Amino acid sequence: MMSDSATPALLVPPSTVVLVSGGSRGLGLAIVTDLLESGLKVAAFARTVTPELAKLADAHPDRSHVDSVDVTDLAATQAFVRAAEGRLGPIDGLVNNAAVGQDSLHVHTANADIARIIETNLTAPLQLTRLVVRRMLAQGRRGRIVNVTSICAQRGFPGLVAYSATKGGMDAATRSLARELGGRVLVNAVAPGFFASEMSAVLGQTQLDQIVRRTPTGHLTEPAEVVPVVRLLLRDQTNINGQAIVVDGAASI
Amino acid sequence: MTELSRAQIRELMGQVLKNQGKVLPDDDGADLREVGFRSLDFSELALRVEDETGEELNFDAPGLRRIATVGDVLDFLVELQRQ
Ligand SMILES: NC(=O)c1ccc[n+]([C@@H]2O[C@H](COP(=O)([O-])OP(=O)(O)OC[C@H]3O[C@@H](n4cnc5c(N)ncnc54)[C@H](OP(=O)(O)O)[C@@H]3O)[C@@H](O)[C@H]2O)c1
Image (cartoon, rainbow over all chains, first blue to last red; front, side, top):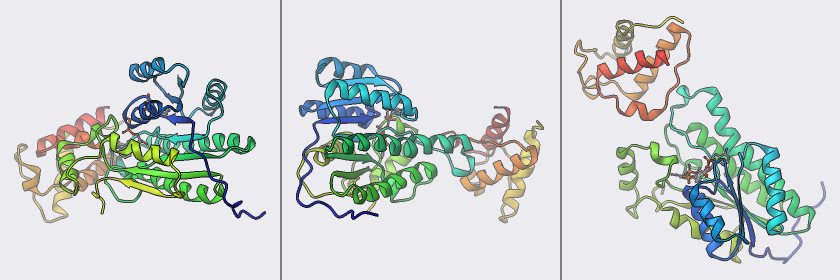
């Protein structure tokens, strides 16, 4: 293998055109909103474009590109990336946010569901990352990747076995990618604690109360508290690379 | 597919508890916490029903949260076999 030591001192500039997967609601929508408000160009997809996402796109017609795409459909994601770059310019930031949740004990989870969770939360983001990084490298561009993982990647939670495996997988991929890409692409993960969304709506009140009780800051994480960390990793000049940053009010500490 | 009757499931539930030195009360209204029937015991019971019928019974956790009594357990598993 050729030397992979980094070419010194060429910094990765702030991202200007960012692709956000799963930008239709929840945290993804909050990230899209924030990046557009910060003046960036944003391409976002989900299986269904919600009225909220459509409205955002309408408000920023020159700086946004949205469409309905299933992240597990490789041909569709490829076409989306091409269309987005045609409209907004080369993508130099990627936020892997799209994911499906789980709330079933491992022994009672159908094999097909395990496969679907892994395909959506692990295989698809790895392939989307490959696609985007190939384009960055081929065009000699530098860029940044933020993987939205979860506290489940580092701590155990019943009912989330396959989901946790995918999030742990993405945390691990984050580290190896950061090494592999030798500083040309900064790769980090943001690992939120539980926050209210469609995904966590399955949690019972008792469980939510329990999480809050165990959280020193006394409240569930809000998407608005995760968004600035994503923006920092995409935009600020730091030397953070290959990290999984936990945003959970020390609930897991 | 052979379905187990409510009485047959009750019988299996009695066995799960007996293995742990616990007793299944006759009253369907008995509270699971008092009986000492926990969520993994529910898993064991569901898997025993699967063994008998040869059909996988998969389900999400939220459904389980509504289960509070012996009768709830039996109703849930009778219903699940039909899905
Ligand atoms: N909620 C929590 O407590 C929590 C905690 C830690 C980490 N996270 C992580 O935070 C991220 C966002 O979660 P959220 O709570 O905001 O979830 P959410 O409200 O369920 O949103 C998930 C987003 O992903 C999209 N998506 C799901 N499957 C997709 C597919 N096959 N193709 C394309 N898009 C897809 C959804 O749109 P469609 O369904 O229309 O496709 C939606 O836009 C996820 O990575 C999640 O694992 C969540």
